[in-house]
Image (cartoon, rainbow, N blue to C red; front, top):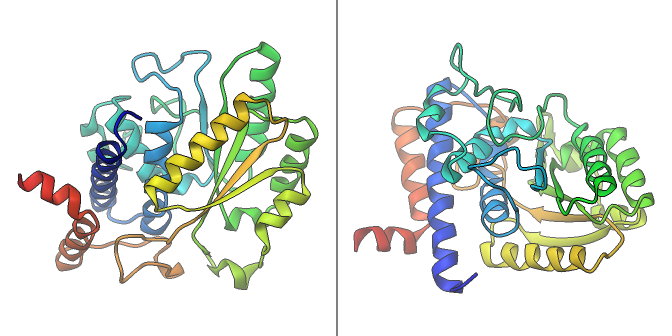
Length: 290
């Protein structure tokens, strides 16, 4: 990064735009996953703009970094970020979930440029990511794999089988990013199946563990830089970044509320949501006014 202040403000601008694009997509669909999409925004924006090596003009570049959105119901955020990067025309977002659209409420790699994994039932992504990381290593590729997981999907046993395998094989080119927003479809994660102390569990499986505020852009950028340095030094272990986030971040009336796993804002409620999201980024708004 050439200029910390300027670059962070640019990331904030992209986060604001991503949040607004999420609202627009869900409005087009007549309902959607506000909570899980809005909690991902800073994670995905900072990953794609400071860590990931991808080429929108060459999306099938063989040595690219791969991204698996295991919590695929948060795809409204991913679509917005990919559109911003130029993988496809932003106008495509206005077809979200409409009949004949390529943009469903889970991403499909055969239809959406820039998507590396077609998600569905949660819990599968880390296994796929471990397989991809193994394949890249066998080919001698510098490509890395990032798997974005939810905290609720760690209830799945397959997650821990994959965690054990990745550590046993020393997959240092694999990073999991946990969107630790504390809610899942049935309620608060601590009431459904409390996985704390989460970090210690992953350490016991042989992973490097980092924890960060998932909405703090400077802290996230530093975290991705540290992980990249560890990977370059052949740390010999996979890494998980546990990012503390808020489901529905930016809309106070729905933040942290499992009832808003799926919902629909319209009319005055939608207008209020846009205002509160814009208010999150005073520096961006000040720059726009100038």
